[in-house]
Length: 80
Image 1 (cartoon, rainbow, N blue to C red):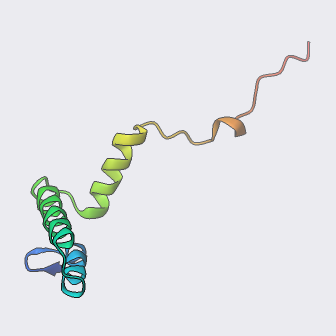
Image 2: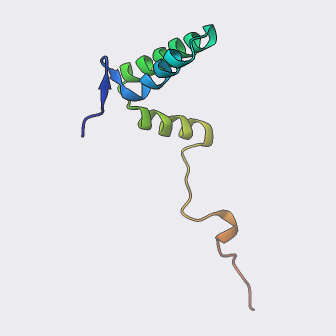
Image 3: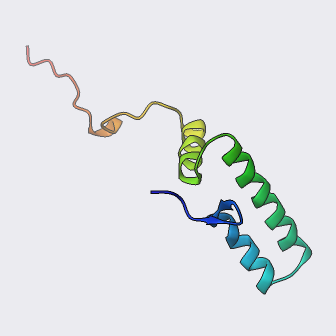
């Protein structure tokens, strides 16, 4: 399925524009410009927004994702 586009950008980038329409202040304009630049940068790198969020999560947390949490792993016991 292709992503929804809004003026040749991902539609999620349009949310700050609607904020700007309803609450026109300098900081909302700056926020809109920053979000638009971030979305453009992410798209130029070839990522969609959800894929970039997963990449950001891996960058913060790390690539290792164990199947079980450490407190659920069974410990070795010696009955001898």
